[in-house]
Amino acid sequence: MLWAQRAQHDSWQFPQGGIKSHETPEQAAYRELTEEVGLLPEHVELIASTRGWLRYRLPKRYLRYGNKPLCIGQKQRWFLMRFTGKEEDVKLNLHEKPEFDDWRWVDYWTPVDEIVFFKRRVYEKALHEFAPLLFPEYRRKLSNKKNR
Image (cartoon, rainbow, N blue to C red):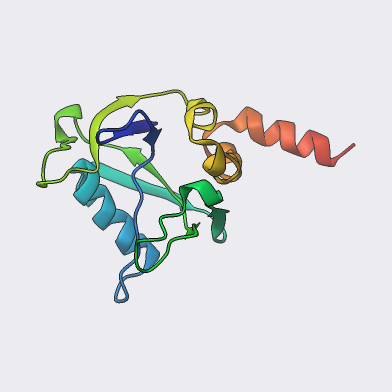
């Protein structure tokens, strides 16, 4: 999993971003991937997206009341993509104010342990939804639970 460190912060997360009014969620995912980590559509293969929207709310202490509009959380559509490029295709310095200043490859479940606490449930939901697509044994484990 490509795991990126937010610029001038200790926190790590997946690339993400907003959807412009003229975009589909998939188009926005490709645009954000290019803007934030320099990857073009030809550097990835789309595997899946979450069935629905995943939401989280910001804790009150993280609300920035001076910002307009006030952000109280996010509604997200997640996309699972396979990296097909080369490591040198990842470029964090394409903009004057980059979103990230470092990146690394991590094991599948590492992000759940490392993400800021208020996003953890969303990360768990998305990764659990995608896991059967990547790990056949995960699918068997789920079907065994249903058959009990």
